[in-house]
Image (cartoon, rainbow, N blue to C red; front, top):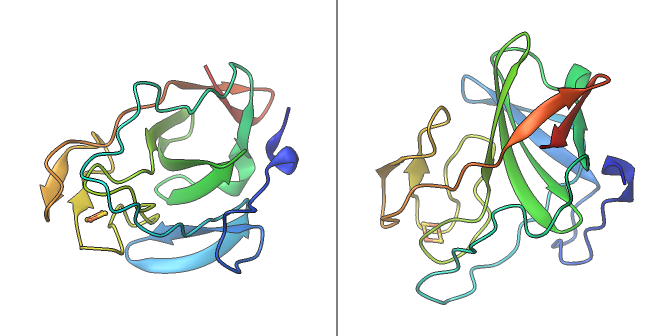
Length: 148
Ligand code: FES
C-alpha cells in the first residue's frame, strides 16, 4: 500500500491534497485532506489511532514535509497529523479530535470548536477537548514516512 492508494470518498469536495503549515502559513502539498464533519458524539477516540493501517503503509514521502513543518493527511480514510521536527524525526498523531471527532488541521487546531493541540506531544492546549491526540508510531523507510 502507498499514499496514492488513499481514498477520500468521505471528503467534503476537496482535492486529493493535504495542507502543510509552517508558522501559521498554510501551503498545499501532495496527499489527501478530508474535512469530515463532527460526528456529534461525545467521544470518538479509537483504541487504534492508526484505524487499522498496517505497518509499512506509506503516509507521505519525507521529501514532501520540510523540517519544521506540519501536515494533515488522510490515508485510506485515516486522518493523520505529521510534525517533522528534525531531518530524520517525524512525529505523528491521530487527526481525529478527541472532543467530537472532527479532523484537526495541520495547525493542530480543530476547525469545529477551536481545540488546539501541542504538535510535539499531542496534548490539549485549549478548547473543549479534554484528551490529547493519540500518537501514531511511524518510521522512515526508503524516503517515506510509514506506519511502524
Ligand atoms: S470536535 Fe469540537 S473541538 Fe474538535
